[in-house]
Figure 1: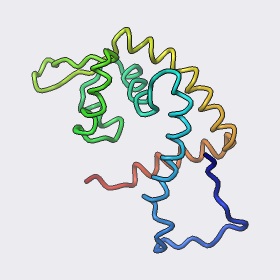
Figure 2: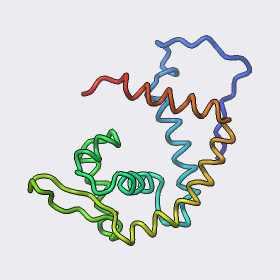
Figure 3: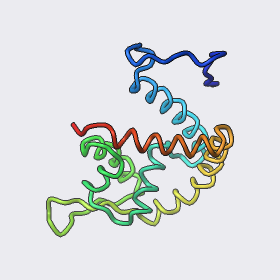
Figure 4: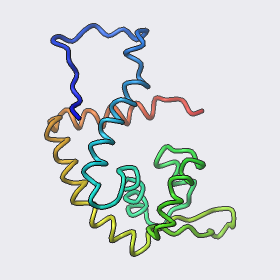
Length: 155
């Protein structure tokens, strides 16, 4: 599926125009990128969202579920729903912390193996996306996305 903006000259953007809605355009970009990474990761059996989640758990080490939700900018209910299939597949372990209310998420040996299998597929997709954007635009995009996350008021 091709995703291209089709305008010959950059129109003057008007914030009040619904087509320029930040939420709409971020969702469109997210869907396009997610579809691409999902296709690239298909041989590993993981969706891009699952790979991202497993990668964060791998990087952070055992992590309290609330901390993981914060890193992912995800509410705990959605995080729990996303973790269940990974736990059922034996890719992660969720155990009580020192405080019985806290839950600790960690990667299992099987989870590490799946991440190692998926990482080259992800890396190839990442390289392709960076190449198509150009490194300067890609770095700017990451900067702008981080600034957008920081600018959004907490709800």
